[in-house]
Image 1 (spheres, rainbow, N blue to C red):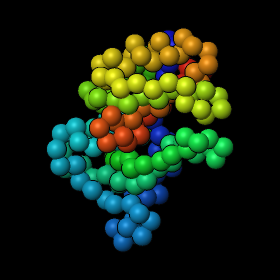
Image 2: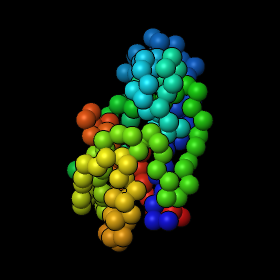
Image 3: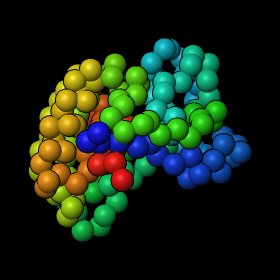
Length: 157
């Protein structure tokens, strides 16, 4: 396979689940409840939270290299019931396949070398084509409408 989609690590967010709402608010995060199907994509489990499921909404730096002009972050959801899961190489999680996506390809210096808006159902072919180019080092997947980071794709190790 030519790519592997990677979630964010659960360990980075577990300490937040035991904080009360005031402590979360003080750090710019919020505890929320998913109110509609497919409305709250968890970046750890790469699944949509079920209606009524509790999540933490917080800011996350998805590209933190200080030397990159594309350094950036934004809001993400992490479900309090998240279970760490990494899809097999070449597998696009259902959470991604049902969304309109903004996909950004970076080189090894964190310079964006291409970008596209794709239907999630077409993500597999887009990732495969980009990773055929040896200049592509990493690809970030965002929601197209709100621009929120969802996951990243690498060549499998």
